[in-house]
Length: 246
Image (cartoon, rainbow, N blue to C red):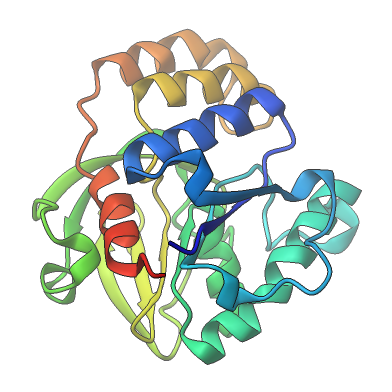
C-alpha cells in the first residue's frame, strides 16, 4: 500500500505526538503505513510527489490563516507556506485530502479567501453537528449518525461556501463544519481525531494561547471527560478505507 502523508502543524511536541497517535488509532493506520512530517521543524521535502501517497491528512494547529503576516510567528508562516504550496496541485488534481480544523482554513483560504474571524468562532468544547442532505449521501460520512457531537475550538472559520464546494455538516454555532471540494478533497472544522483524553492534553498546552481564560482549564477538562464523542472518528476510518491504494 502507498502510505498516507500526514502533515502536522503543532510546534508543541506533546500535542503533536498525541495528535499523531490519535490519527493512527482512529483511522486504523499503522505508523509504517504513513509518512509523518512535522512542518514546524522544516519545509516539505524537495521534490515531494503526491503520486507516492494514497492521500494527504492535515492535522490541526494554533495558527490562523486569516491573521495578517506581521502577526504570524516565523514558524506559523513556514507551516502555512508549506501547506498552501500543496493546495493548487491537490485541488486541480482532486487528490484525496482530509484537512482537520486548520485544514478547512487552508482549503477555504486557497479557494476563495473565505476565512476570517468575523463570525462562527467556537470556544473549546463540543459542537452539536448534523449532516446536511448532501452529507447523508457522502461516502466519508457513511456510518456517521445524522446528529453527533464533535470537539471544536477555533478563532476563525469559513464565512461563505467557496465555489465548487459541497456543504456536508453544519452546526448552530458554525455553519460550515465539513465541506468537500470536487469529489475527493475534504475538510472539517471539528476534530475527527479528537477524544476526551486528547482534548484534555490540548487544554493543558494551549490554555495561555487565547482560546479560553486560563482559569477555565479545569472546567473544560471536566467537560471533556463527561462528553461522549465517538462518531467523528468514523470519518478518518472512511477516508483511509476509501483511498487506500497500491
